[in-house]
Amino acid sequence: MRKHAMNLPTSTSHDTLFLSPQDVASLVRRQGLVNTLQGLAACIEHDFLRWPSFDKSARLASHSPDGVIELMPIADAATYTFKYVNGHPKNTALGLSTVMAFGVLADVATGLPLLISELTLTTALRTAATSAVAARALARPGSRVMALIGNGAQSEFQALAFHHLLGIDEIHLYDIDPAATAKLARNLQANPDAAGLRLRVFGSIRDAVRDADIVTTVTADKTNATIIGAGMLRPGTHLNAVGGDCPGKTEIHGDVLRAAKVFVEYEPQTRIEGDLQQMAPDFAVTELWRVLAGGQTGRDHAAQITVFDSVGFALEDFSALRYLHETARALALGGTIALIPKLDDPKDLYQLIKPAPPAVAAPLAPSGTQQPAMA
Ligand SMILES: NC(=O)c1ccc[n+]([C@@H]2O[C@H](COP(=O)([O-])OP(=O)(O)OC[C@H]3O[C@@H](n4cnc5c(N)ncnc54)[C@H](O)[C@@H]3O)[C@@H](O)[C@H]2O)c1
Image (cartoon, rainbow, N blue to C red):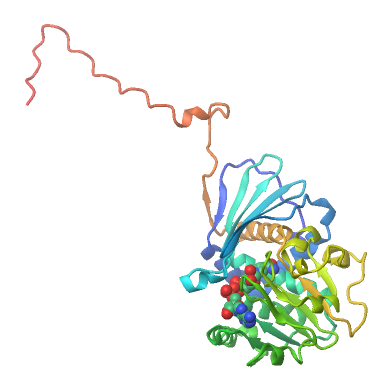
């Protein structure tokens, strides 16, 4: 997708494009969900291939007993982005999403914020696109069956990305909450983009994963859970482990990682946040970008179990924000907001709060003239 491959030009306008969740939903409807996932995957792959051009760091996390709030900055020579995102698994009981996010894209040359956007819906789209990019590089060619463990907010996006970007045509569903599984099945059955996708609901994780080529785990529980244990995956499975993304929050037993070849986004961050947090500091992993760039091998043989220990890296949000910025401008979506003051003299910020000059007093009447009496 060449049109998403270029850096953004420097802007001199003061206005910031604002995209609400409704604006991003309109963008997805106008583009089509499959086209959007493909566009995001192309941006993510393109940016992963430019890995050395980015100023990267592990995200900054503020932990609390029930969740985490994170800031995810990254920049290349032209564009700076950050995402604000939380993770609060108990939120759904309060009527709030587990994951909520927004982000900013700014011009490196001037520091001007060019875009402020919702990123809750966008995070689900970019996570599914990233999972598909990784699986295209790591899963066995010809993979057709995927188990999807955790059927909450992220799950439809994972299902549709793997159907269209990988060729998955059968999905095995499992969630500890049957209402979540019913919701996922309902949403997919009503979606023309999921036509041809067979859905099978299972009563246990063990049964759901038994015959799967790919297993995607997207559960939310702030604990060291072990939803995938040793011996549950058949040889050759690709495990797309998405839900273990925070210290003290894992999904996969250490023995599964020991028996597999493990791939990560940005190693310094995944060692702290991923299922990898259980392993010794010298446990071998491969960064995904090296496989995409052809410098390192992905899967070594058909019987190997591969694990993408996904935690979500700032570069995926960089790709998503530049995709949104370019596409929203092309479709004339969103509004503009004045985040930055417009000043006649940029050295005179004080002009914004300068007291208004006193009202001009009425001229005094010449002496000797009679004033009307006040009522
Ligand atoms: N790696 C990334 O880039 C990335 C991006 C977004 C979200 N996430 C993570 O993905 C997870 C899912 O996010 P979401 O927005 O879908 O959350 P959600 O709360 O909407 O859904 C999570 C689902 O997991 C189910 N669940 C919990 N424990 C389970 C278990 N042991 N077995 C089966 N199902 C179980 C819950 O019932 C719920 O339906 C979260 O942990 C989130 O932090 C990761």
